[in-house]
Length: 568
Image (cartoon, rainbow, N blue to C red):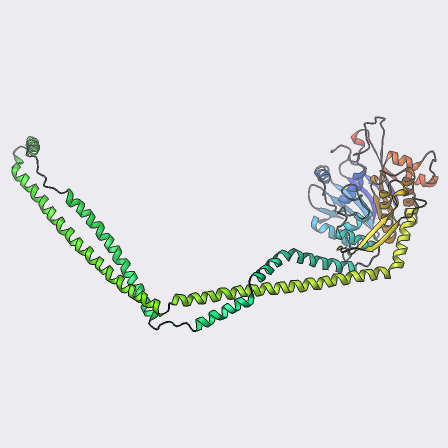
């Protein structure tokens, strides 16, 4: 892969025209004001933008803030070449679409398309993972350890797997180990439920339950139910229904009797006040004159006669109701007595409910036995699977030990290559690179890169750089592109910084390698070593470094920054 150009429709953006070999973005200081800084002017963002154009995710808080800014900035274009074919990638960060040579591709398919372009479809490493390995960008955990190129925790399986693969280790055993460990992990997750099954099995003895079932079946088979049981049961049920109807009838009769007794009590011999009638009559006479005439005495007698007749009728009705209530109560008593005799007879002859109860108990116990047998099978399978996987795990560990023994010569050569790179930085220390079997990790092998601490300062950064160079030397044809962020120089002395550039200049000259780097002014000055204090780079190499600067960003005024403005 060769980067050609990174540009934007926004005229403020500083276009990056990449060189064939080394390309440098330099952050320079124009002002003498020490408060001004060349940080945040876009050096690190230049490499990040390459990653984002090539499908990187905006994971960190800072990256998400950048995405919000880019969404309204303008269109971006990354031009690159691979296998003699040019590609133009267009991206509007306001949406999820990408365009490759005018072909619209959604974000889900974009990474797969990159795998296709860079021939990684059938590879165990994706293009994105490959780019992360050879072009560490600033932030997250990319520079915390030699093995964290994917920005993942150090113990991450996939990240470790990629490193082992790039180091030339046979990963078939690693994959087997991972699969076995994953299965063991799932079994471990299920162990809580399995322990519950064990408790159930301990609490309930299957043989005891089966004995109880057999006893109940025997009791059921020998259970005698009288032939007349069914008929007697029907009679008892019918009598119960009759008794309930009679009780309801008696209740309504008693309510009617209570009501009529109240009316009868209120019905006395009420005489009409003759004076009142006369007064009413006189009023009527005033209006109707001689047409209305009635003797007051006759009216009084007529009223009393009505009252007496009503009382006699009520008395007769209450008497009749009492007789009916007595009759109903007597019928209730008769039916209740008959039912009691039948129920006693049923108890003496063996109840159907008991028979049904035995049947239901058998069903319950059989279901419980079924569950316990299921638990027993699961527990058996669990122990068998765990034992089988544990054996496989042990066998894989044994194979890994044998593999390392068989690959001793290759691993020694691998370590020597690493040491040769390290010796470029430290005269008396070559460090070490060991591939060792782990105690029981998913990734099977540990990668132990080491430079003694007494070798000097910036051991971590130097080790990281040497490891990255080793991976390139082992996989030159995979990508032919490398990049580092300027943060790698943060703890290094002038000799170490210059040595890095010397190694890069040699690699880009001798190989088809494109290397991209961002760098600050102080580091650049130390590398160029104008006073020849350290004499690491030749004058020709210094000239090449100067010529490799494709973009200069300045601290003074934001228009001199990568985006031509501040977005922080």
